[in-house]
Length: 111
Length: 116
Image 1: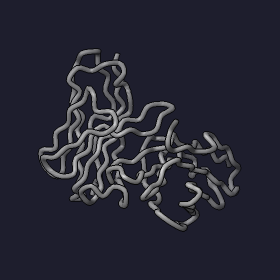
Image 2: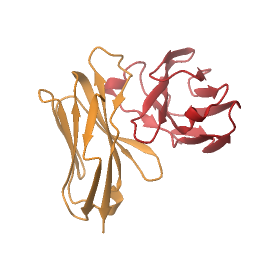
Image 3: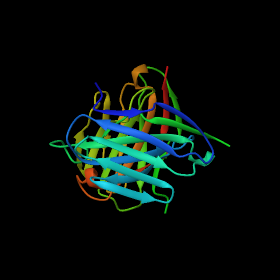
Image 4: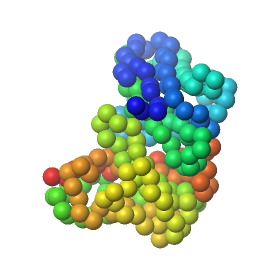
């Protein structure tokens, strides 16, 4: 069983809709990352968080450590948001550099 | 400032051939990483380097060797390529040594490798 589970696997939305992507993990962690992989393949780090909530533009990431769950929200979605969104965690007790990655959520935003 | 660069972008090999994937970063980062990405699976760490001259095995190191000759460059070598090594390979870097849990990683554009 993968330690990091993302849902949904695929998500299709209309431009302007509010998007939520979920990440659940089964172990204690020291940090969680959200990354974006563009259709061309490039990967960009969006957020790193260990508690609470972070916001950058139309993107909001939240984490609930007790429930072992994080969400990535996109407000007023746009076709340029179409990408794969990847959740990754650093498990407690592991090496600080070893991220465990989810399989990703493919988001398609139609105009 | 180019960030993290990788060469080549695409490569086709025959089984048994060898090749080296090159990675360089110009951000003066200490840590560098090699990952592979396969369909239906998350990114998996192949090797990690905390500083020049040091390397550490990741989750899937078998069949690969790495070299961190200086702070900028981290190469990945396949000595005898196998079809199971068909994948997309990403190099990444982060500022400190061993602090990836709490810091951003910067990724290169990837190398698509096909082993026939």
